[in-house]
Each structure stands twice: as C-alpha cells, then as structure tokens.
Length: 410
Image (cartoon, rainbow, N blue to C red; front, side, top):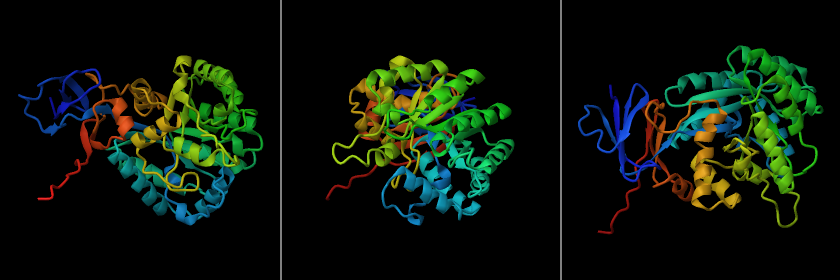
C-alpha cells in the first residue's frame, strides 16, 4: 500500500521527471505519472534531484560547539588535542546532549540520514558523553540512524583505565570501537588492543591514522597486519591519513591498493585536514588532504566527512555534507562532471558501504531514505552546493526547506 507519492523529481538515469511511490518504508515503483491515480499524500518535487540520503562517516558530536571554551593560539593538532582534553573534563550529560542535538538537527535538515559519531570515553570524559549520545540515538531514530564508536582519543597503553571503559561501553551498546595510534606511545600495541575489543564484541573498528605530513612512519602496516590476521576485511576503516598526500604518487597508490585488497576503507576530512595541516610551511602551504577519489582504480572504498564542528580541530562548520563535498572538490581540483559525480558518491553510496548499510541507490525495493537537492544532477549538486529542500527517513518525512522568494520592487 502506497503511503507517499514523491512527484516530479529528477534521477540521474532518467531523461525526464519521474514519480516515486513509497510504501512500508521502501520504494515501490519509479516512473513518470505513477502518482496520478494513487490515493496517498503527495510531496511535490518541483524537478529537484532525488538523491540517496547523505551519510556522515566520521564526526565527533560529543565535542562539537566548544570553541568558546577553548584557547586557540597556534591552530595545531597538539593544541586541539590538549584543549579538548581540558574542556571535556567539565562536560555534563545535559551539556553534551544539547550541543550534539543542535548539530544532529542541522545535519538532518541538510539531508543526512545516517551518521557515525565517535564518542570519547576515558577518565576525563567518563561515560557522560556516551550516555548523552545513547539517549540522542534513541530520541532521533525516526529521522537518522546514529552509530556510536567508543573512541580512545588520548591513548591506551599510557592509560589502561581507558581500555576497561571502552570494554564497558561496548557491553552497553556502542556499535563499534575506535582508536588513535598517533597519540599513544606504543602505536602498534594500541592498534592490537583495539582489535582485541572488536573481536571480543564482534564489531567493526575505525582508526584516526597518520595525521601529519611526514611520508615516513606510517601506522598503516599495523592496521593492515591486524585486519588480515583477524579476518576483519570490510569491517575496518581509517580516517584522515594525510600522510598519503605527502607520499610520492606511486607509493601512495601502492598503499591504497594494499588497503583495498585488505578491505580497509578510508575517510578524508577536508575541513579539518586543511585547517590543521601544513602550518609550519612558510610559503606554498600544502593542502594537507589526500585526494582519495583519484584512487578509484585501486578499488579503494573512499568517503569524505565533516569530522568536527566549532571546536579547536575545526573552528567552523555547518554539518552540510554537500558543502563539504564542494570543499573537497576545490581542494582536490576535481572539476569534471565525472569527478564531481564520484564525489557525490563519497557522501552517499560509498559512505553507506563503509557503514555496512544497505545499498541506498534509489530503485524499487530500496529503503526510502531520500533527499531532494536543488540541482539537476549529482555533479551540479556538488558544484553549486545545492541546498537540501526535503527529505525522508524510511519514507517518513523528516524535514522541509522552502526555496527562497525574491521580491519584485513593485
């Protein structure tokens, strides 16, 4: 039984506007004029692009919106880590919920229907942030699928209490576990300990990795070895990996081929990588972001994401993935329609794959997670930072935004 008719929308593989019939949370049919005789509510698309829901693969809801509590003097990674560690000791559950909710609501209004958020769990943060995000996950399940990664930002081997706390969080409902080897005095052991927890609870892993511009000293080999030894291909992700942008092209491509063969996905964070990297350069500052879309030939699963909003890691942001895709395209100098279509995939189909979600491609039988973008194609959506006009989660409308009205002088 049809619950909703999405009328007069564009799809990339259709020459003319179509209707989408939605029932039971899934797409029933796609074609021209399908809604003419259906007794169901109608959402007029006005020729907008119907896109799969946008997917955020790497964000930190728990420490969003704390810029006013921190001192930003140097704009370095070390400063961001230390300032955030200082600030989070004063977090309360209500405080984290309020800040995270504001970001989550904005993300929904920009067309995001699925999200993976890291949440720091250690002696400074306790379980306050985790408890807040558990509640947020439940409260907004109707509009967005929120996945929580129990995360060790400040090391494990130097702070054994954190390991026990991650264990407890996984037992209480964290969806996966994540680590940050570059903050640990023993990165190799750090990686192994995170995999131990993943195996214990049979969950995926996600690492912040290689966050600098020195081509040497990569921790990718540690992650590769553990992934292959434990059979965790397809369940391992790494984020940032800015070292790859400092490697010779052949070396970077070889690394990407190894990652692809092992089933390890990669997420780049354009805003944070651009803000924090290359600050010691006196001229011709490097972009500091790896142009991962160019590695499609290696089979690498690559996405892009927001990372942080209004904190020392990224002192700006509106959690719009379309804007982030446009920023990525600018940094990567990706301007062809084909490249920008690929980039749109990095926040939709490829991002859904990284999170292990069902294929979000809009087709009969697919889950009806849909966003209407004010554009004629995925490439133009990225090129113009097309606003999201309307969206639904499993066929339930989740937001609407009217187009601007320009007034005639008369």
